Length: 131
Image 1 (cartoon, rainbow, N blue to C red):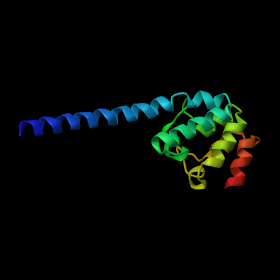
Image 2: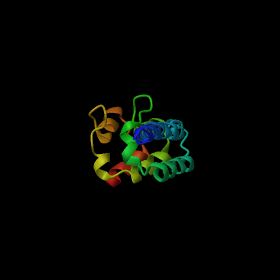
Image 3: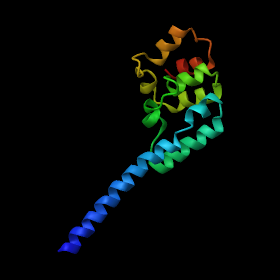
Image 4: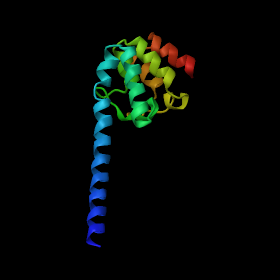
């Protein structure tokens, strides 16, 4: 009887440890995504998105809202950094409903672009085409 209790306790502790490392793993995998976006490295962003999708079964829209680059979302960061390749890729990969939804500050991408006067950005043109 005592062996069963000890065994189940060991299994429970092991399961808790594995869930903590999985959470830390995705944070590590997404750690430099802001740098990739700012550098307009489309190939590296594709690799990172593929790796996260295969390792954690998450798509861009699953973790997009949880990432902030200096207070801005990934697409906003791409627009501010003039990262056209990466920005248009993210606009194409995101569902239309997420593109028109308010972000963490309560403004939609369209409203934010209009407020900042960034309508001339090719990423904005891609956003308009998607909506």
